[in-house]
Image 1 (cartoon, rainbow, N blue to C red):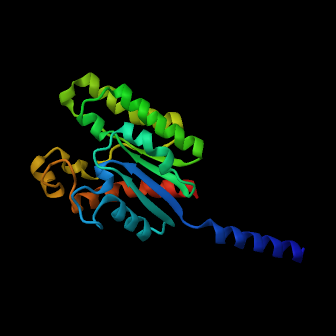
Image 2: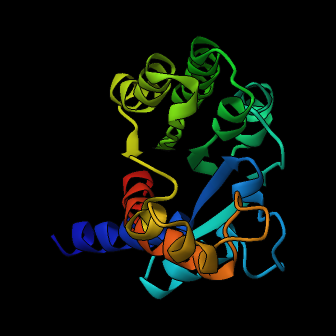
Image 3: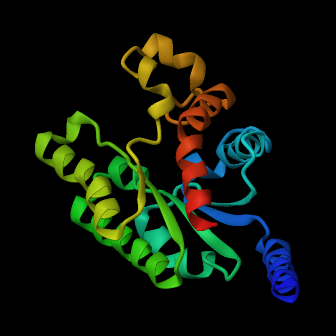
Length: 211
């Protein structure tokens, strides 16, 4: 009995020693990359700080590329998912929408990304994007439905909107301005802080799912 207990303790200690932090790749565009911000103010470093403060054993990799579309993400997802990556945040589609690309194309590209992650055994948090109304109600309905549909189909975690942390002021341009850069598209450091506060719990759930 004593020998069995010692073997069990050694096995558990060995498992704990080799577990290590969960490596999470953040696949995205300029919003992920940190466009227009100093190195420590972008999404990934602020989110890393939030996770550290909440006791998560995780390391984030910034896989954001400014100007990237879902097609770009689909083209590079395979080499982004190096062997140490166990989880992935997918925040793509904003540039597709800004260019008025066919939602069917966006859906197909995101489907490719999620399929590659599934095949690699990587847990995914898919972050939703919403089209503006100026493309018409049909376009908006088709585009907005992409994200919850694919998350359900692939069993991915889902965050309804990248800008959820700014929703309380999003309907008022004057109230939103203090949280945005001069281009009106990208959040400033304080805006990112609010985005991270809303997004953090979902990322924490992702890390725990990957452990």
